[in-house]
Image (cartoon, rainbow, N blue to C red; front, side, top):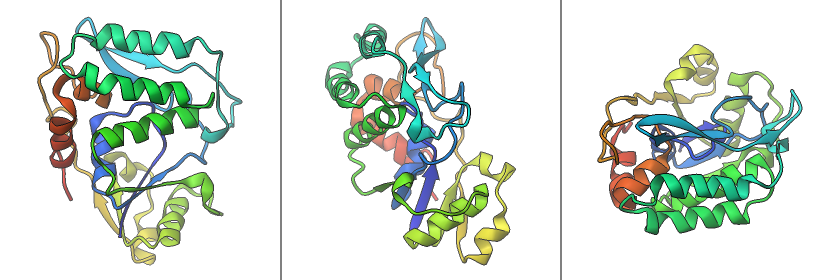
Length: 232
């Protein structure tokens, strides 16, 4: 069984979903420490031909776990959808993909983890990604504190024998631990700048949230990109 494990991101980019797509089980790693000023509470969209941050305001202790982080205030529930609508209302597929996304933002609880999870599942549904089982890490009994040990423990607990690792994993993973557990590592060789699609504006900007792709080319074409941009 092939597994991928990743910390939750807010409205992740195409490469994130590419990793998820090629796993049989995806583990939503929400039981580790929250990282400030990173993709866990913000995503990039294109405004005035430039990548711009779309940010969820949070309130969190320095050592808080991701699933402990609360959202700050309630204004984001109005301002964030307005920003998305203002940016993409003229996109070809906004009327198809916007309402499910806004529904997810409305029903989510006032926690970072739930907003990220509800919107992630909504985007997976738009892609028809029901072949992937999603498991939330805070529902598993985990003991390991070492980053590699935690990944291996999750793989063993869920019966995985293949692990999809991103490029950055090579900077910290102890691959010997995977070998000792009989788990094959598959490195995701995703070209950040190699995937383009018709995008509103004059200049293509790579690395944006998947919603940019969905609004511009629709679920079917986005699914094709997500599934073929890289495959193991």
